Image (cartoon, rainbow, N blue to C red; front, side, top):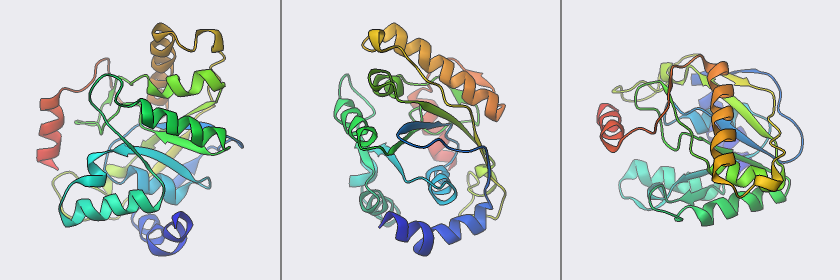
Amino acid sequence: MYWILKWVLLGPAVRWFARPVVVGTLPDGPFVLAANHLTEIDSLVLCAALPRRLTFVAKSEYFDRGGAGAWLYGTLCRWTGQIPIEREGSGRADAALDAATAILSRGRVWAIYPEGTRSPDGRLWRGRTGVMRVALPGDYPVVPVGIVGTESVNRSGVRGWRRGRVEIRIGAPLSPTQRSHSADPVTWRRTTDELMAAIQTLTGQEYVNRHPSASERAQRDTAA
């Protein structure tokens, strides 16, 4: 179903609105694709524009909440094999991270937004360490990706999409060869910070060295 959506049912419309330009190339084999996150259509644009099949984690409420729009999004997540993840609570994301490891072990691409949520204000926020908890033990390359311009298509506070121009900037893979420290939270934090610096170089966003608060996320969702 992923490829039917990409080439027939949904991808052509996404490409028409976003007119994506890809700068750089993706490696072969399994890797983690780690991108900034600005709008709700970021995942659609990445999947429509990039040649590899991408498997994301998605907030578990997308799979379960009511409403026609949410039902449609949850259905797309299920059809394309996306992984539900709990955002809150110690240890609650472990099952999703285990599933991400399984994706990589099958030679595929796991895509993630290290910020853990959409940016509330266009800035780049501190990354969460789950990406390195998965990448380090298997020595999987992590490819930083900068998405620029999706706000021109999916404007905050405006219903529907507008035609814009999106750039997907692919950085050099990071190869975190830290297996002896793969269970060390200090190493997870340091390598995640290095990843966020690489993404910031690609996007030019202002960096915020903390996670957005619940109130900041709520203000973003209200504006949307």
